[in-house]
Length: 214
Image 1 (cartoon, rainbow, N blue to C red):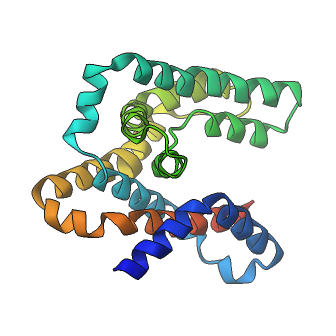
Image 2: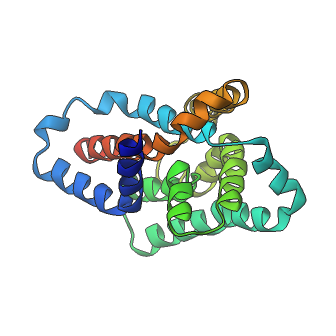
């Protein structure tokens, strides 16, 4: 277990390096990654499930006790980032597909990876988790609305289908993770240190699949 913990720490510490290397390798030698695209949704759900395992009731108490930083973070997530993405796409006159994708990128929560990076940077992890939790719970409504508003000129947006997809891929796995941590805390505590490793591996596979598809 200590070996896995050490590997998990290294994986998280050099997360950005692994992501770049994975993207370059997938681009230069795509053959081994050709069959991964069908697993993107499953892996995303798995990453969200891992995030759910890291959440505690105290994380949500933080929101109630000191809501202002969380409100600022969530507003930045769903206002500043989407508008910045839209501005870049508009000013650079990106093709419709790239413009819509950039707006989508700016309209979704950070997920587990952001919490890992805050932890490695010795930042306020509970605050990061609280922000991520709130923005993730708001995502089924906020993300489709933002895309419809900002990216509708570049691509047709089906808010209902996107709402259902976010519920299936994000909300349900997170709720399952929270439930398992609530009822099996000892089991989760023993394995919590390897969750960053599993999340990094899943994200690397997702990135390689996305590079191949594009």
